[in-house]
Length: 247
Image 1: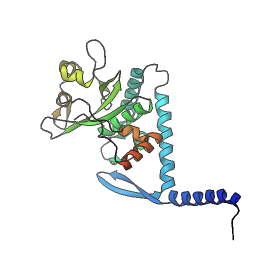
Image 2: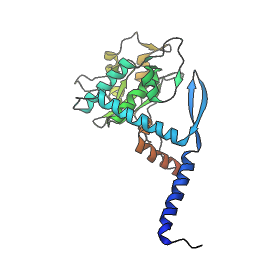
Image 3: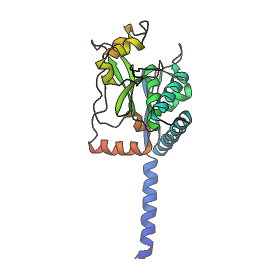
Image 4: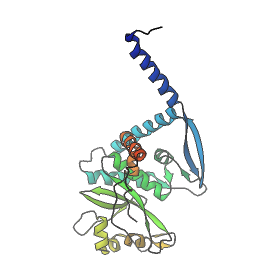
C-alpha cells in the first residue's frame, strides 16, 4: 500500500514524538551523599530534566530577589555574600552532612563550609557575575580551605561566604588574588589571629593563594540550562578545557 505524500510529514512527526517519549522515559540516576556514603537515586530522564529546570528558575528568582536595588556588580556580590553568610549556617552537631543539589542546601539552611561557597558562587553566576570556589591548600598540602573567587572589574577577587569575609586594600578596592600575593599586609589587617581551621591559622591559607588559571565552564554555570547544554556538548566532543583553579 502506497502512502500519500501529504501523510509523510505526519508519520515522521509521530515517529519523532514516539522516539522522544522513549528517550525521556529512559531510566537515569543522580547521586546523593549522606555522611560520606554515596548512593544512587533512579528516575526517568524527564523527571531529572524537569527538576533541573525547576532549580534553574529558582536560582534566578533567589538571585534577583537578593540583588534587588543593587546598581553595580560589587553591590550585588556583597548583597549575595551577606545573604549567604546569614542564611547558610554550619551543619549543626548531630545533623547529617548531605551532599546533593545546591538548592537543597539553601532550603535546609545549613551545610559545610565548601557548600556555603557553592551557594554564594552559584548566586553570583546567576546575577551575571563569573564566580567559582576552589580548595586552597597549606604549603605542606595536608589540609585545605575553600575560598570563593568572583570576577569584578576584570580581576578575580577573593571572598569567604562562611565568615562573610572579603579583603580591601588601603584605597578601598576589594583585593584580588594578585593583590594579596603581592601584599600580605592586606591579610594581616583583615584577619584576626584567633581564626583557625583544622588546626591551621586561617591566614596560612590566605598566604598560599595562587593566580587563577584555566578556561573550563565554571561549576556554578553548570546549573544554568543553556550553559549546561553547551557544556555537555563540549564534554561529549572532548573540547572542554581545564577548570578555573586557584590552588
